[in-house]
Length: 357
Image (cartoon, rainbow, N blue to C red; front, side, top):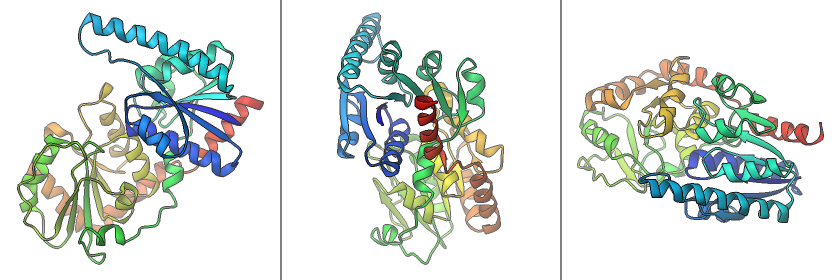
């Protein structure tokens, strides 16, 4: 099979797409996977580095003045015609969109050329691009039952996030924490606020540090673009790193404090990990709150909304959970019930069904 995937913008769209590509190649090394994304966002670097052929489209932002919006519409139209040329050249069997506006020109062009199309929606609240494209797609893969009612005219199956299929077999390697100066024999809590970090939450974490009990270790992943400067840095049991292997950290930790992005949620469920979720309020459609509620309502994670967050509440919650193994085990057990660890293979099965009936 020759599969063309449109993805980009954030890791939440890119990682599941790369994980699907990985399983496609594992299932059949002759499967060919080609990616399309923005020419000036993270996918333009990350995807070629992963070894895949990549076509970059240039689409401007919608933000700002009327002139900006006209430029956006013009760039979208140009990207549509470029997508048609790419499709005529590559002749894929199917095109798959993983959300984000970058999917729009490719999936529309594929539809108009009679090429089969599929969408993947990672969040419990479907994005605008996928809602729009669902009217044209042959198949839509969702992660939450709510996706069905959000795209009522589409052929939707709830198969889950391909990232769950990749992380389910992760084995914790203690060297991940030993090389940053922590002991593998003492429980650790990991704070991860996304690849870019969060200045607002970092300040609360910083003020909570003196309130943490001293009988566990803490890893604070600050994020690569986080401008916040931590003040409470003189505690031997606390380490600050700009980046960590998130899958390893989630697998080995006693407790994780994270955002509620789609990939993180799928990994928490698949590994599983006991988690406190602080959904980002700065995302489209407030989708992280909806993601977090899906787990919190099933006692599969603790949710604290950012406007309710304080150093005292954070420290009290973390201290309590670290010392309550039964509670953490229950969170992990309930999270694992929500995991769809065969998501990638079931998605590939459906791709074959769409193509061959």
